[in-house]
Image (spheres, each protein chain N blue to C red):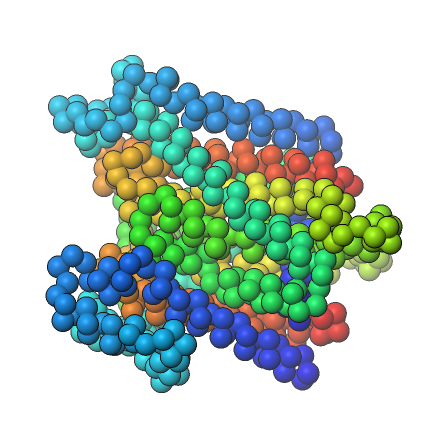
Length: 291
Length: 311
């Protein structure tokens, strides 16, 4: 029964995504997203080369300085250069977010394919599991899992994997349900190919793009979760720079040093913007003509 | 009636699954759960007490049975921090969270409907593009960050709203919780705006709209009477699907604004290593989402007869 409601979900999601922009607008938006993400990734990768300061070493003689030629965004309450910490925080959060989507993506795609292709009791079991996971709010389950597993990066990866695979499984399953009735699949089946081969070689290349598009918004969601965990002090332990803990540290100085809180948040917004633009642009290219 | 019955029947495996997940939380704790929770200064006596209390000295199935037996009697265990049962602590915190969720849902609709109408009224126009850029920025915005900026702008710079708290009485809640509800609503609005705009464009293409136009129905009336009424159902569906996100967002926002709801209780209990309360709050969140989803499904079926037959 909920199998059907999952299809209903997909129908709504498709309807949700705007696909009606004219081409001249569509392509620049995608290009802008790619360039923006490219700059962000370059800044994150080259971070250590772009700044002469150490992100962790405290300099208590130079705390809470305003922006200047030496410190572009000033220094924090422990005298550390904020611009340097932004680069390193971005580097850490981006790395964790990109790595964190890999295993939910793989698990979700495999389970979704099996569920959609075989149907029957296998499908029923997998979809019940999906129902159970989505019964919990995303943040609640991630925070609860990180709490029981103990703080640190490993717990973040495990928590996001356990919670994140369900969306990929739902998307791939509903795509496979449609695709498996196509002639090329029937031809492959009557040719006597094994189920694994049909799924991996014939079905997956045709349906995986939907999961990749969703993956873009999933990375955004994961970055928000990582930053939220950092904000609550449940994420990457200090003194390692993390945008969430920087927002939290700066909160106490909001009235006098607004830049300490504002800039880490702006960096997250830019990452989200670039990935959303890419996701929407890819969706337009892969499914053209959908209203 | 069969629809209602089937929908209730579907609830059983999910409800059992939710309790299993919450039950297993304790076994995800690395090492011996009792000593890990109590920390390095735990006395052997306290560890032994927790072992007995949580039934850790029994086989797994009988542990779950013990957990379920207590649960159906409304017993979520004893808080390790407060000298009270976890269930009663949680119960006092639920109203604030429900207030925030309902308030935020209303604000989300109040923001989304006008924006989606502006966007759909002239497709691909300048205003359409501006409205459609909102989700791109909004989706990546950390809600607690937005909350801090809004507190700074509207509670510290100009004193329109209090910086934190729940307020007293109906209008007190309405005033104190405006900023928190607004932040949750802004986090949710991108998804709802997209859904509403898409469904309004669908409705605008329908034949009955052409008919109404050709009869000379004035534009405002056309939008309110014909378009909005039909476009709102899909948007409410999207709101229903995202109810988990809406409820989860309150965990973060309650902590920034110090609202005494279950989200704030969850984070403070994590720092007090009060495992039974964290476990209980997780369960309550799960139950809340399942119940709201059920209500949403049943209300669409009541509002729109097509739902009952489609499924």
